[in-house]
Length: 117
Image 1 (cartoon, rainbow, N blue to C red):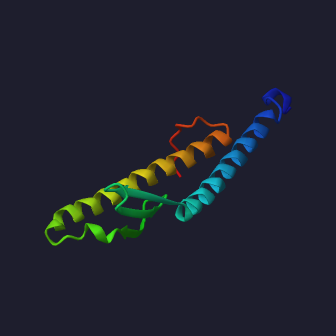
Image 2: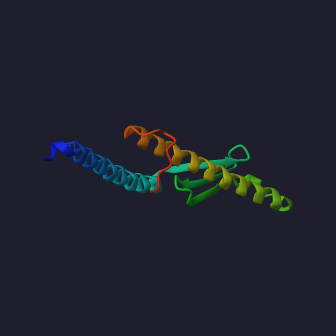
Image 3: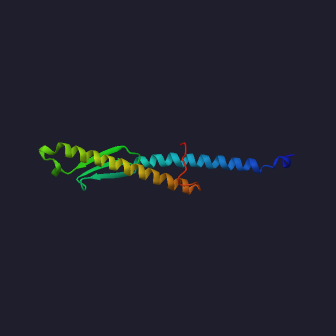
């Protein structure tokens, strides 16, 4: 009777697909936690200002060379700080995307797949 319905092969494929989806979701959760621990450093002013952020883009610290504090250069200093933060955010996005690509490729999925997790 089951042979007329294609046997259990279809159910086995569905179970395998569900297991793969669960594995992917687990790996995605693990990767999100790892991204919180990965640090990137953005720089501006040839390294005079450095911003450290997680790979998820959360700013964790600033390192400012004291030589840039010359009374009248307030706007320059502010611009350098913003540039370093933006560089860190860009690097965080790139790192996150690279980690996602590694994960999806390891699961046999296209690197540019957009997942809902």
